[in-house]
Each structure stands twice: as C-alpha cells, then as structure tokens.
Image (cartoon, rainbow, N blue to C red):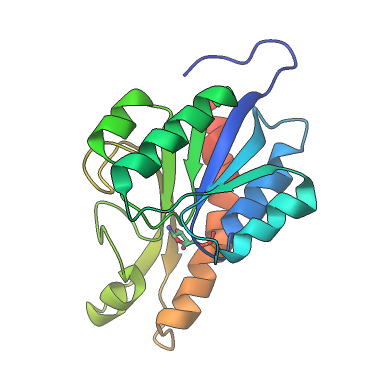
Length: 192
Ligand code: GRF
C-alpha cells in the first residue's frame, strides 16, 4: 500500500447496512493526527441503517443504494466513488456481497471486519456457531476483500476467550468492543 505523503489523508468511504458502531469508531479515529485516512463518504445498502446518523453528525456525505438491481447499484456506487475521488473502502457491517467485477476495480483497496477468527466461520451467525462448537476462543479479523467471501488476506486478528456463561449476545458484545480497537489498528498497519 502506498505510503503517506505530506499531510493529505487518503479519501475513504465506509460501507454500512446497520448500527454503524464500527463506522462511528472509524470516524473518531480518522480525526486523529495519526490517522492516514479521512472519511469522506458513507455508503449504505438501506435507508434503515442506524449508522447513517453519523453522516449528519459529522457532516459527511452519505448515499443510500437500492440493491434490488445489484448491477445498477454497483455501477452507481462506482461512479460516485470516482466523483468523490475515493481511494480506499472500509466495509463495516455491510450486508451485501460485492461482485467480482466491483472488487477487481478496487483490488487491494477494500477491507472488511468480520466477527470471527477467519478462516473459521465465514459468513453469518459466527458467534452462535462458535458457542455450539464449544470453542474456547472467538474473535475478530480485519482482512482484504477478495473475490471469495471472507477469504482475503488477513491484516490483523484479535482473540477473545469464550466463557462458559457466554451466549451469542454477550459474546457479540465482547467481540464488538475488540473490533473497535482492531479496525483502526489494521488501518494503521496497512499505511505505515
Ligand atoms: C460487526 O460485528 C462486524 O464485524 C460485522 O457486522 C457487525 C457490524 O456492527 N461485519 P456495526 O454496524 O459496526 O455496529
């Protein structure tokens, strides 16, 4: 990944579909001096995403895309990313699977956070699966997005102990807390 030159931060878009706690945290990080990125655009797959409120709060441009027509949505997202000169994309709870064509256009420039210790538990319901399998460890992973779901190169991972009292809700809460530390750390790792 290119090194930072001067004071210019890398124009970044965050893609969301839900609560946006990672988005909130990435915005906070982006405003620190050490952050290599600035958040210039928020893309959502639904107008119901609670995280959209952070766009208003921080005066960041937001746009909602209807994925009923996937091709059309991706075409329009791509146009907007070009227009806004976005160079880097963080997926944060984005519930749509981007097409191979889209990913190839931004090869090596899209990262994602996943609530498991990849390659374990790709896809959904990671915490329930870890508990059902009586795993001792859970965690989260920041990885590059490749054309195969949740399979791109791992950037950083954080392990968390699963206690006997944990259910999927308590585990999700514990993991999410670590996600908020891991995402900024992964961004720093990429650009430093
Ligand atoms: C996180 O657990 C993330 O790992 C997963 O979706 C969740 C999004 O949470 N991909 P939030 O919207 O950032 O609060």
